Length: 493
Image (cartoon, rainbow, N blue to C red):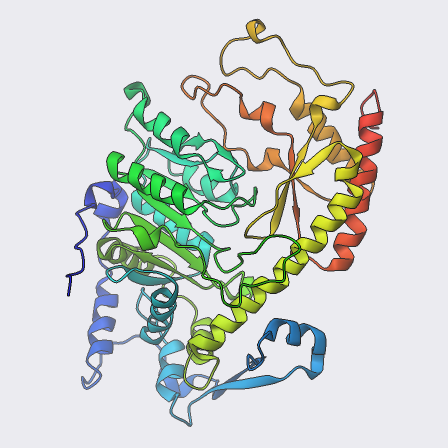
């Protein structure tokens, strides 16, 4: 039997803040007590569990006995079959309830860690990585960025990206370097070009890449296996840590018009699954497959990174809330869905979102694409359709001559026109997300973009996560506004 590969030493990526952070000594004592329950403890400072005003917690959840549990849950409404998950002081789950409601270990409840480890084992190949519970992806990403960011560092990310994530790191002195993306996601050749031509005047070459490989927000793009392998190879050659933020991993789809076959099809192979060095930090969440208000997820990382993350958690947010951890432990435990039921649920969820996507695409084709002023790629995952608006067809579109401006200078009035289009949608009762809110700004002194991103900001993001009624009401408005907008020769009032 071949021995599992050993991870390389990546501690040189850690920030000064991380290296200076000490272990919370009180949490160390809690760990000793947790690992040695036979000890008599007079060291704790939390209320005794007999004083918790909670005797029992019941969760009534959807049954996953059918082949398509999500469809059954929706169609039957209040009469849909359910099962009760109970945690009580009076039965075998007493220890779980007492532990979940007490102060705990920064990594999370041991039972919850086993649950997410089992999920990783089923869907990924990561025998040497270690899991850490989090308060959802935003919490996880913020902690990972702070773990790795030295003020003045430059980090890499998709040129259109979910804005709050890079903004969280900017406050810690991180400069972002956008990497061009297309309908297939991040372009490996562009990533390599940036790294190979890095100007030392900018400071340290980037050592962190933040990316969303499945159903990227906002573009809906998904990296092919070939691109994932290329990106990982580049990361190895240039010593890059990859933060794989993958909230839409369990929302992957087939081609439009086909009956959803994802009840049997394999999910895409993650960057984590090809990681042999320990340089991939994967971030998962229950937000998109359970409920965002749970604020519960997990990080999968190199054991050394796990150690520093736990120290950070123990000195900041503390361990994730007990109620959410109880739910996933019971849900995937022997009396709940178990892993097989979880798999049925997420695959059924894929089928439901695929039907929503196809419904929106049909409306789009009828009411928007037919105008001749917009088009969209078909997303293979996620919740969004990235709509390209053909601003060059607008009567007031202006493009400066190539020799009239220098490199990296905006040459069109795309931003102005897209702002007018957004305002026109609002005036007609429709809210869409303009691409401008997702732009990762480039540094014009160094980022040599043949086409500045402001000239390529002629996109809007629309979601198919809402109801069919919302989509049926909204898409015709978009089509109508586009017709009126492109027919006008003066700004919308």
